[in-house]
Length: 394
Image (cartoon, rainbow, N blue to C red; front, side):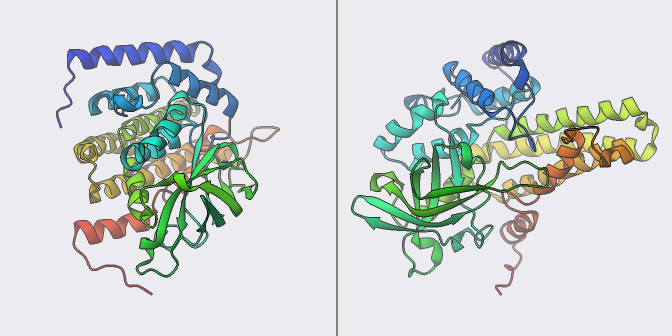
């Protein structure tokens, strides 16, 4: 992949940097750097207003085709934007599930009527989406989904439970993977991908209080909830293909911004180390250096995967990248607390909110689980890249 920037790319970088730094130094200064890992609960109304500001300026859906309201930017320009967003301290996006997952899925697999209905509100930042995949007995084994949907006239009636549903309590819509044929073998053939409104009877949302004390994750219970028959994406009983397509869209140019976000976190750790004189500790110095080097490797791995992602290919390289960055981010969290020494184990004062280091440490324990656990990623690499025998089925 040739990442040498053209004059047009350089001009685009200047445009993005100027807009982001100006806005985040002005009326949106209070949310700069907020809403990231472990902080997703913070300042939600203000970050929703930011999402709409991005939409008005055309910074939502930058990778989408222009015929669907996007900007159709090249992969290089997408990378540029996400890098500048991280450098400017852009807050955690409340619309990322709609923009990065549901939107591309509807563009690729949806009907024209679905595109007209669902894409414009995502671009405007006026409708927030959540993802209904995981269940108590269907996490990494997604084909084991038990939530069922039964057709009743021109509506689907949904019964079941989803778990670890990010921002369900603040979302307008959820894309839900449901079982619509309980007899077909193999099981993944009986699944359907439904678009479900969250504001209706028959949906109960229960927050899951995490070790950080926050609860951006939720359990969602469907008891007679309904979705229009027109809101099936793809084919009935063909939801597995659509669901896998959605997961493919999850790995994109934003991973380069993710690397810079981690870099910002390392900067916070380094500042704390200098303030406390911890940079004189040879062990901590070596750990800081190792993470700095690892961030460079993360960037190169992300760049190396970009061409295949642009083609829509899912390769073991994406699993390698997930395994790498998840373990790296966990190491950053551990370093953040270790730099503080014993002070990292206690809160400063009431109301006893977690510090940056504590929040980062606790949240990053989840990085090696969500989005495909490290164990699952190793299985994929072993079986699909190295040709090893599949894991025994118990």
